[in-house]
Length: 326
Ligand code: NAP
Ligand code: F7E
Image 1: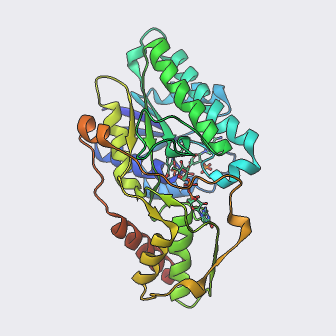
Image 2: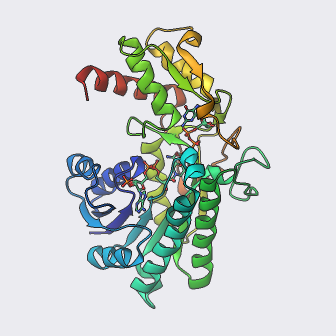
Image 3: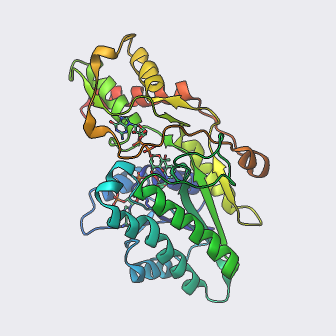
């Protein structure tokens, strides 16, 4: 039975990846941080077969211990401070977790495997935020990186460190440059879930408007359940490499609002949405559009869920959750 250790198991992607790997017959282990993490119960409810280990990306000895306890064939590093807006407020913390945390885990894996470098395959959760102020469109694996936030800068560090461990030690270390991916499990701080929750509450008469920031930003949004499959495929290749994972479509926040409100029968959402300075960013990533041609050709990966299907899925899930009082 193959085994895997997932950092970030309590997050959106960690849960989908755990479900995918369990369905494939893996022995799945997850790293949980904190002395009384409230999301631990979510993991035990949704994926009870995952074995949990205590650890934190900023604490290298805890990573070494988790590797010893789980002895995985594959390590997926999904743990991060992942909210871009928060990264300006806590730039050092973001750097410690999202940048140095990658080095800690790579080094822990290197020490764990000793001279047997093929023993563990490593996945790093890189991000389209590394393209930031985009230097070409669409963005591909060779596009110049120009991050626009402490989060983006931290991800660039983790990305290059992953490549460096591959080149320096021959480690099977791959980096997935994933564009935005969403789902009903998306944290409510991110714009898509903030909108789907607000639309559900507004349509049920529980809220009268929503405050948002820049409505003109454009993102290449896909479904998280599709994207974790690409992570797994990367680690099944004979050679480690870097891959862009994206849909190849870009949409604005306004497009998302159009579809989300239309789903509950509201055609004109302008009186229901107010812009608020607090949600504007010091430096914005205006437009992202990914070219996932390499993932399609080498991994045989393509997205299954379309943008309208994604929006409908999220609004439906929040309507149901709000009605049930979850
Ligand atoms: P998420 O829902 O925010 O989950 C982040 C995970 O990281 C959580 O499980 C969190 O644990 C964990 N974490 C935070 N600080 C940690 C620490 N010090 N030590 C160990 N774990 C820690 O993020 P996601 O959307 O699933 O994304 C997964 C990964 O992909 C992240 O690295 C993210 O930056 C990257 N990424 C995401 C997207 C996207 O669109 N979703 C796109 C590109 C890349 P707690 O629950 O304890 O906070
Ligand atoms: O913002 C705009 C905001 O916070 C998207 C993370 O998973 O994907 C995510 O990062 C856009 C930005 O995601 C609000 O200014 C407007 O232009 O949903 P978001 P993100 O910053 O793109 C990448 C790929 C990652 O790697 C990250 O980990 O929406 N926006 N109004 C708003 N954003 C938020 N959060 N809240 C608003 O009210």
